[in-house]
Image (cartoon, rainbow, N blue to C red; front, side, top):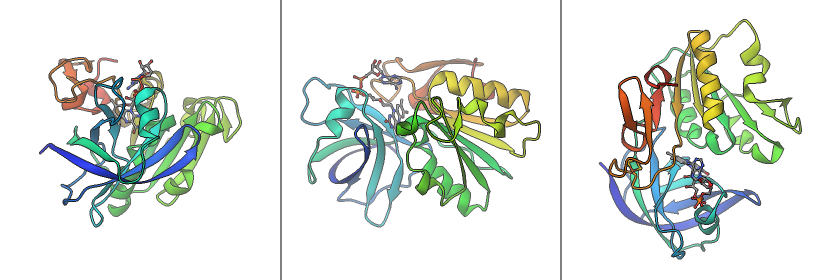
Length: 255
Ligand SMILES: Cc1cc2nc3c(=O)[nH]c(=O)nc-3n(C[C@H](O)[C@H](O)[C@H](O)COP(=O)(O)OP(=O)(O)OC[C@H]3O[C@@H](n4cnc5c(N)ncnc54)[C@H](O)[C@@H]3O)c2cc1C
Ligand code: FES
């Protein structure tokens, strides 16, 4: 069930000058939140930002009724979200979208590019509860794009790539030895990040005959299937990422 609800800004954690975690608190109980779900956030106090902005739910705490979002500033909406004050009101439509399928024996490889790691904390928590071992492969252009490895490290091994070599292995995630080596111990890959990265990973998953789910971040407007601006071509025709996704098994995608 989708809810439209006001939250209060409970606090921020800044990771650097352009990446932050914002925690929002509801006065009422939260519904169940699943790994992969997202919210459409109405950006308050900026008339230029008319449409809601979609963000993966990074974390939730059902005791304190809080939802957290990991936000990378790329434009006016995300910048405005970074300038709110504690106690400000933010309206959310949530929980939206489908969820990752964690029915696997594991181990699993979780690949996030930049802010694409956002949906993977809740996934890591669910996999850990099921006793499924996981390795996170986190990629960025530079070390300033790689965050929260200490948090994710509580759930699995951490591997890092940066394109400029400032942290971890130099190159893109697809260049990491864990992907390149002949032996591949993983039973499933989960990925989220820029489309070209996910397409390259999908190709590798097909070559290795490994299950793979990708969480797509197509540009969205309405968030509930009305405007068709988020469509993705699948093997069964065009589908809306906001209502049929954002998580797709790569076998469904016409990539
Ligand atoms: C399901 C979903 C989950 C997402 N989760 C997160 C998240 O957890 N953390 C996070 O930081 N971001 C996430 N995003 C992306 C986020 O929604 C955009 O960064 C945000 O809407 C940009 O708003 P803005 O007003 O700051 O920038 P705009 O002014 O709207 O855009 C600035 C520039 O970025 C481009 N752009 C905008 N949105 C996207 C997009 N989705 N993909 C590629 N380019 C885009 C625009 O074309 C423009 O060139 C998610 C997107 C989707 C669809
Ligand atoms: S965002 Fe409008 S249909 Fe998906």
